[in-house]
Amino acid sequence: MSWETERHESRDEIVRLFIASDGAFISGERLSEILGLSRTAVWKQIKMLERIGFQFESSSRIGYRAIHIPDELMPPLVERILPADCPFGNTILWAPERTSTNAVANQLAQEQLPDGSVVVAGRQTGGRGRQGRPWQSPSGGMWFSLLVRRPCALSQAADLTLLASVAVCRALTRTGANVQIKWPNDILIDGRKVCGILAQMRTDGEQVDYAVIGIGINANVTIQQLPEEVQSTGTTLQHALGHPVHRPTVLADVLLSLSELYGALRTGSGGFHTVRDEWVAHAHTLGRRVQVKIGDTLVTGTALDVDDHGVLTVRDEAGLVHAVHSGEVLFSEMERMA
Ligand code: BTN
Image (cartoon, rainbow, N blue to C red; front, side, top):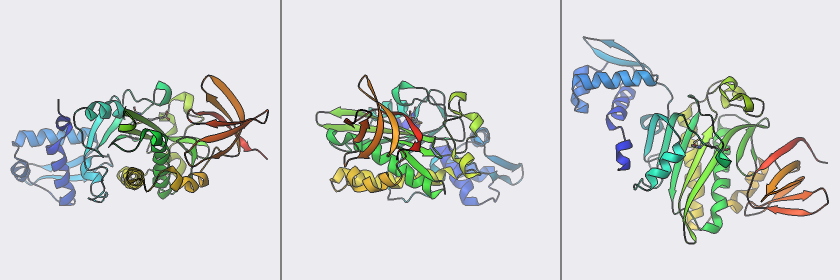
């Protein structure tokens, strides 16, 4: 199977036409002429767009006009904002529903999906988080996976997720949210998780052959839409800001920052060390009492620092300093240590 079957040229083209018409009527005849579709096929596309959230006014005499265009992460809506020369997001494969964008991106990576492609879903039915945990992904959120081919050497693999957290941090800051990063790559607002990142990689000797960077942002989602067990620890952008965000703008901002950070990683001119100060400035973890799992051992202590490679140092209660290369912080207490 080719990844190109995931493209929906007619659907995207019709949306482009309605955007360009800026609320004016387009006749059914003109639509079918430009799209090379029958009038019935045009009507079917319109009905399908209505199911996604588009609203049209239609008149048998003058045609259709769009009266509401939803802020879904469809190619025509993102490409209006993303600079054409951005290496990421040239191919955006959007579907109203997918099991998991990471699963689809991993599969399409075997089918020549180009570098920098983004697989997006309106909602996920089988979204996955770290440690194989389920990841609730209702409509209104941002659920997407970026494919990056040959991003770096295996020794720099940890940089990929850390840089992704910096890119998301930058994009969410631009919405007006006050965001922090919980090591290694959870994004928090007011100490509550608003975004999770799941990076999966295929390796080839000492190189990362490709990486799928899955990003889930609770954007225009209410707290009640989050699973009950995370309602006290999670949050959403809409809840924190008091209004919804324009999701295509946020996606374009994430992709622009990622292309800059990964571009520098690839050429060797950048890596986590070049943005460590920025990461530290947003760090939620440092200076706090934390519990981390190192292999099978639980270590409780104070998070001291991250080094140039993103390795976290934790001083345990006996005064021993541990270097934590991977894993996750199981809790970080609210009060900062003296
Ligand atoms: C975490 O556990 O914090 C990581 C969550 C990652 C969720 C995103 S949503 C888009 C992509 N598709 C998935 O199934 N997971 C990631």
